[in-house]
Image (cartoon, rainbow, N blue to C red; front, side):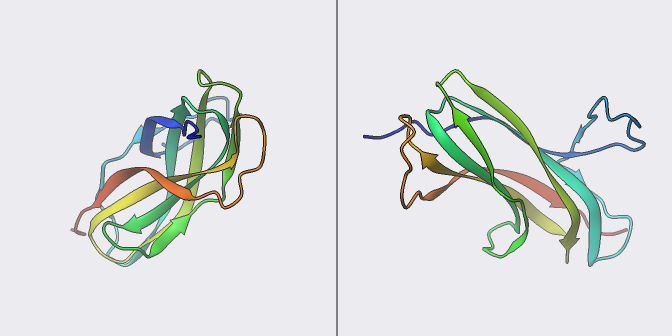
Length: 146
């Protein structure tokens, strides 16, 4: 039987404008497609976030996000898994994954990769050997330092 894996609704790379509300009442995010560094390469970017929204699944799934140079297998940064149980296919989950001190060696195209792995089937039975699937990628262009 083939179970329904999550359907991606949104996958965005964001920055948090400063200053942040002292009470953290609001999460203000600015979508990022291109960044121009203010210091020469290599450098560490203080922070970036990914906003993810998924729905349409049945079962329990683990989600993770990784940053890689486009077309390369080396992972520059990654997040711990976050698990969600979808009681039915109409359930929607939205979550942020934060990245601190991201290393960038050079200008070019990078990508955030969203992975999903089934942990439990719709009946709640553990899935052994759950394969991690690439659900989506989101590009990020780093421009030359000037």
